[in-house]
Amino acid sequence: MKPHRIEKTIDLLHKKNEEKSENCFFNECAQTMDIIDFEADLGIKLPLSYIIFLESFDGGFMCGNYEAKMVKENNDFEGAKWNSVSFFGLEEIRKIYEDKSLMNWKLFDTKYEVYPFIPFCRTSIGELLIFANPLSKERESPVFDAFHEEFPNDWGMLFNNFTELFEAYVNSNGYIPTTSYDKPTVLEFVETQKMYDESKLKD
Image (cartoon, rainbow, N blue to C red):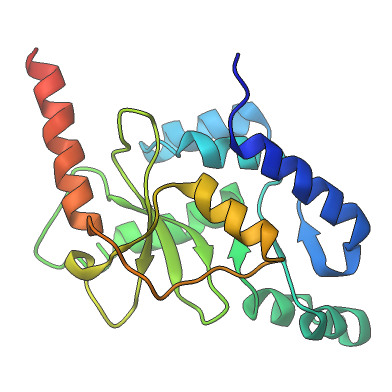
């Protein structure tokens, strides 16, 4: 099988995890069967790039020196995590997804058969980054910023996919920009993928 582009960045993170252990807090890998069960339980599909990440690290975060000091001197792991860009592992995604799905978060009168927003990351200012479900035909999703003061029809695209975000994150030691929004919005993407999936069923 041809190596996925994200694998090079995963190798770089492994290296940084060893060389800067005081700034890196990543969990052990998720098991493949746990990922399969997770998708079956929730009726959603995770992007291929995020699955490859999970098979190396079941969530975690990189932090700056101030946050590293919070952990080292005060054992304040949760504080350091909250003030960093943090990727969710399977159980954290499950909990947040189920909570948001139950309240039909941000959709109000619009109801989808399967809740279409998959939170996978929290930024250092407490915003959620999400994938959209259903995925593209390449089994990927853009990364959208679920900005709490706006609604899905205004949630713009931050990165074309998780691989691009992850490259920016690791190369910048845990920083990602969250101020430039491109088209499509998350609702435009969801509706486009729904139409594509429905047309396949008719063929």
